Length: 100
Image 1 (cartoon, one colour):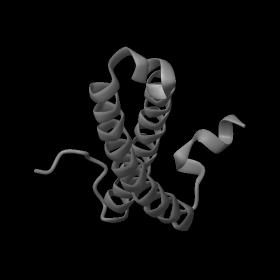
Image 2 (cartoon, one colour):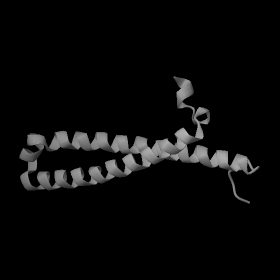
Image 3 (tube, rainbow, N blue to C red):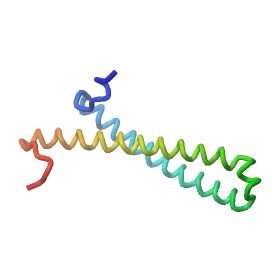
Image 4 (spheres, helix red, strand yellow):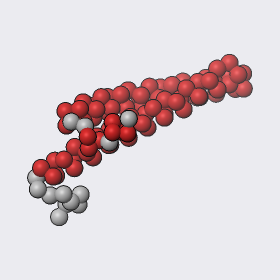
């Protein structure tokens, strides 16, 4: 299981697929996150504590889970991107992560 989490062991095509999928899913979850948070805020603003009791709090919990999923997708995107860039630099003969 640990071996699957190390990005250096992944084939470059799998990295590109992971990069693409995570970027699309990240965009979708953040867009959905914004829409749900806005509607939740409007609902609570209109109905106050009764709105919280009728589902505003549950929706807040769902927003939190969406935010966590969005963060994990962003981290997957950055991990795949970083590994692809490191492989590209090694292919060019430089192993430095700083441009000179």
